[in-house]
Image (cartoon, chains in turn blue, yellow):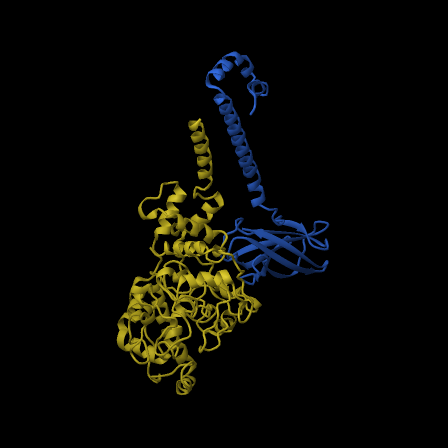
Length: 182
Length: 399
C-alpha cells in the first residue's frame, strides 16, 4: 500500500501539495479509504486515457488500411516501349456503369505528332474476378488528330477494370494498359 | 467509490456500445442507395420495335400472352409458364409446356430492361424472345404459317388496325416453318421468298405486340427500398422499413464480405451479364453449356437486331455488334438473375438446381469447381449466423 506522503509526492495534480494539510486531516479521519479512492481514480483515468489512445490509433489507421494503394488510373501514359503517348477518356466525360459507352483513345508520337491509320486491338478484364470484358469493344472511327473512337465498352460492375491496347502504325507496334476503377 | 466504478463502467459501455452500433460507412450507404428501386431509370424506348409503346399493340400482346390458342395443341400460352399471380414464373425446376424443357422459367418483372434474353442470352430483344417459345416443340410447339393464319382468323381486324394490312394468304400452307418437322420445313422451303418474308413480318409483329405488353411488367418497391430510401434521406426507418439486426448484418454481408453485389448490382440486382458460378448440371437433362452455345444461335436468328424485321436504326444493335463471341468464360455461363422477389419463388438457378436460398448461399460459400470451364466464385467463410442473415436480407426484397 502506497503511503499518503508518497502518494501526494507523486501526484499528477500540482495543487495536491497545497491541499496536503486538509487532505491529511480527511485521511486521518477516514483511515486509508481516500488514498485508495485516489488510486482508483488515477487508475480509472489511466484506463480511460488508454482507451482514448487505442480508439485514436484505430480511428487514424483504419481509413488508411481500408484503402490500399490502388492501380495507376492515369488517363494519359507512355506506351510500354515508349513509342507512343496514349490517352484514354470517356467520350461523354463520365463513366456510367452497365451501359454501352464510347471512349476516345488519342495517340501521339514521342514528338507529339498525331498517329494516323493505326490498327488497334482491345482486350481486358477484371484482374480480381478472373474474367475478361463483358463486351468486345472496337476502334470504330478515326476522329482526326490522332483520336480514335472506341465503341462497345461496358463496365457491368464496380471494381478494378483493365483495358489493354495493342497499337500498330508506321511508327511501330506497342502496347499500353489503362486501369479504370469504378 | 461504488459510484466511481459505476461511472467508469458506464463510460466504457457507452464507448463500446457506440462501436457496435449498426450504422453504415459512406461507401456502404452509396452502394445501398444504388440498389434502391428509386434509382431505376425510366424505361428507354425500344427503337427496334416501333409498336413497343403503342397501347393497342400492348393490348393485343396481352391477349396473345394469355391465349392458349397460341400453341400446337391449344393448351399452352405464354402464361402457362409465366403465371401472372406467381411473378410470371411457374415454381417448377424446369418449365413444362407441350413437353418438359431443360430450363427454369424466368420471372418477368423489369424484363424489358434486359439486353439479352433467356438464361443464356440466345435472343437480343424482347420481341425476338417472345417468338422463340412459340415454335419450340417443348413449349408452344406451333409453326410460323399456322400462327399467321391464326392471327388473320382470330385477330385480323385488331392486327390490321395496329400493323397495317395482312398479306395475301392464298397459297400459304397451313403448317410451315424453317424450324418445324420435316414436312413443315419442306412446305416452308416450297414457299416463295416474298411469301416467307410476308409470313415472317406477321410473325415478328406477334412478338412486337407481346413485347409491348411485357414492357408494362415492372418491379415494385419492397421493404428494402423503403429502408434504403430512409437511409439515404437520413430519416428514421419506421414500421416495416426498419430492419432487424439480422437483416442489417445480411445487407452488410451482401454488399461486403460475401461479394454478392459484385454481380447482383443496380436497382434490379443484376449486372445483366453471364457468369460461370459452378452451378452443377442436372442429371437426365441434355448437355447444357450456357452462353457459349447461345452466341451462334443469336447470330443465326433472322429476328435479331441485324435482321430485316428490326425497326429503326442499326445503331440500336450495340449489344449484338459488340457481343463477346469467343472467350473461355462463356462456358457454362448463365445470366445473373434479379434477386427481387427471389425468396418467394424457389427453386433456383437455370434448371432449378437448388430448392432453397439456404442451398444457394451454401453453394456460393463452398464455391465448388464447375464441371466445365472455370467458376468465377471463390470460397467464403460464412458462419451459420451469417448465412441466415443473408437469407433474411434477401427476404426483404420480397416483402
